[in-house]
Image (tube, rainbow, N blue to C red):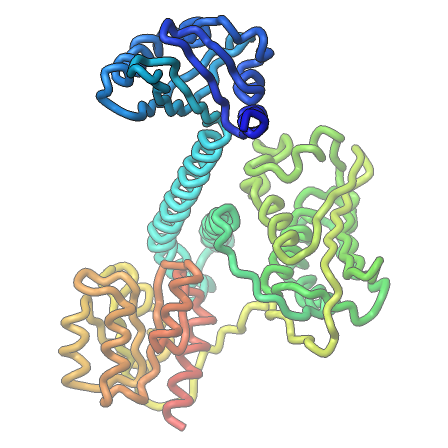
Length: 509
């Protein structure tokens, strides 16, 4: 029996202490000694007060008295013990009294559990919860700001497109230049909004990647024409070098395009007059590798080390070139989300080379990359008279839509500012097409969409959501609710008319 007792006493995971009625330690097991940094021999004879921090002494004194007076059979408390080096160990102590045959107290038996691991785990969980809450709050804030910025940008970009189309030929050269500059500034602001939205989604781990096979050569050939104007203005030549033909990467086509466009735009922007940008595609070590090389001023080792930090423009903050310093951060994160890498090599005066590495794709899964070329603006459409119902409460947005659809004289545009007016309007007359905003004063646009889709009279009417809400989950919801398409504000004139023309021509057929 004594052997069993010794075995348990010396090996139990909790600290065990025997304390006499004068609060001296009679015996302590190795676990308790190790907890405080003493040997078991050193602890014997020490008082409990000597290993208890002053702030815990008063609370600790209640335990023996309550046990001796038989008020409680077991006294449980949380406190701290002081180690040999002066640090504190948070513990839970469960104390009971051992009695003599005549009923007098013999000694107290305390089981001591070290709470450091548990408290660290709880703190880590609280930190995770706080980080998740902060991330969610930031994502919500960015989404809200994105929506609020896109709404006025819809007017800036919408009207500037219309002015370029209608008034452009009558303007003086300097006035046309001003108008183009205003439109480009609006597009730049929109790209910054999109970048912030992407960064927030990446940090919140809410960015969805749809992996397909992307023909990198075809994608590069689509991108080069987009950069010709800026490259020509900067006196930079563009070239595509195919180290290997038919290289297909496994990745999200839209995101691969986004990365390459960002790298190539930077290579043009930060090059020198008479410089070159070379896009080189090859297979290497079982991966698809794209290198974007420029002949610009290059970067120092310190600048390379800061290359992929958010809002870091590497000393170019005061340059006239547009930029926010988050494009490369997003590109690197996107590459990693697709199972690849993005790295940079440079030296002052020797240009910079960015290397994008992605897994090779099965050629049998190849799909066309998203077109990088803007849709051409069609000035006329061949279908007959049609009615379009636009559900929107913002008067400026209504005027933008009225101006754009005004290029189609055969379209009559009716406007409703809320859900109730919309339901009353469709009860009187069935339109050929319904365009509706997401945020209405009396109803959520998605709920209104579901009600409209449930109306048998509107079964053949295409419905399109047009909103400044650019969150992917909203687009998915809209599709699930029955929207045939989703237009994100600011509206692009050519894209809007192409969609409207297609839907109305199909309805007529």
